[in-house]
Amino acid sequence: MKKIITISREFGAGGREIGQQLAEKLGYEYFDKNLIIKAARKANLSLEDVKDLDEKTSTGFLKGLFDFYAKPLNEKLFAAQKEVIRNIGEHGNCVIVGRNANAILREYDDSLHVFIHADPYWRLQRLKAEDLSGMSEAKIAKQIAAVDRSRAKYCSYFTDTEFGVSRFYDVSLSTSSLGIDRCAEIILSMTK
Amino acid sequence: MKKIITISREFGAGGREIGQQLAEKLGYEYFDKNLIIKAARKANLSLEDVKDLDEKTSTGFLKGLFDFYAKPLNEKLFAAQKEVIRNIGEHGNCVIVGRNANAILREYDDSLHVFIHADPYWRLQRLKAEDLSGMSEAKIAKQIAAVDRSRAKYCSYFTDTEFGVSRFYDVSLSTSSLGIDRCAEIILSMTK
Image (cartoon, rainbow over all chains, first blue to last red):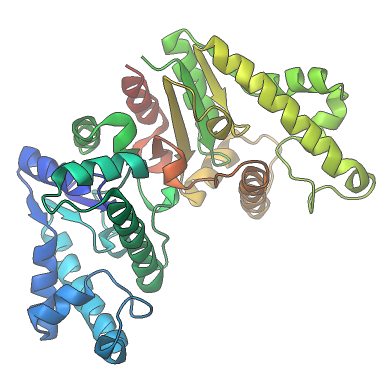
């Protein structure tokens, strides 16, 4: 029985939904933004700083004032997150979405590391349907590309793994090919 | 119901076994080396030449005499293989292992594109157990790395996809994490 499930995901691919479904069905604790908050407390950063820095590496994304502080702050944040993720992993019975938890908990027994991806156009349509602000398709498409790039960069910068490369996960699934619920079922069956 | 299953795989990860299991359970035709033979006939190459060139790009791997002919020969072979793979795809009810069939048949309906990978040490132990020639572990490890590199190169050279990058497959599975039979079962359930 798998005690730790990590889910890495492309933006808009449904990784969060799958994580929530799994946590509910397995009776596990679910972690994502909460991690950041806990990590921030540990590192004594204000919540505001942490939100801005979340999953961004220190170069290229943070303009103006933040540029100056970005690097040391970000590494401090990553170190704090890492400790939080390890603590969660030690307790087990958890689903962790994002934060490179697959790399951090890779050596832990009874873990299952999942990558969720989907066709960009499928993600665009999904995000558009969810968006209440009436953002244009072009803008959403740009955002998808930017978040993916940022996650890939964050992953390479802080770990010795690469975002979305199969060998760093036990299983990678396309939600646009298989559907979100079907992916959740498949992963659930793998935990047993 | 999926009519076309393509399996790309790391060397020694069990992709062939999974492909054979699937073909048997689904009553589909199984293709791998046969493809090359058919492709060779189309391209009017001798079987001997084809064996030597199989899944190698034209630079770096073929020494001596072959170097001179490698590039045009190899591209001719790839074009012929592509045509054969398309014909097989048109007929459907097939499992195709290797040969970048995922990239060639990517636009086909009712297809499932699979990548099979495994921890290098696990593959080493597996290949060692199968090897009757008493090859040293060091030599097998070197061979694993060389074949993987060659496949990655072949993939980038001839297609606009990358070997082992999740987004080019519907599903990627680790046989060292999940076991060969379990992976075959999971894929079988996805074909329905």
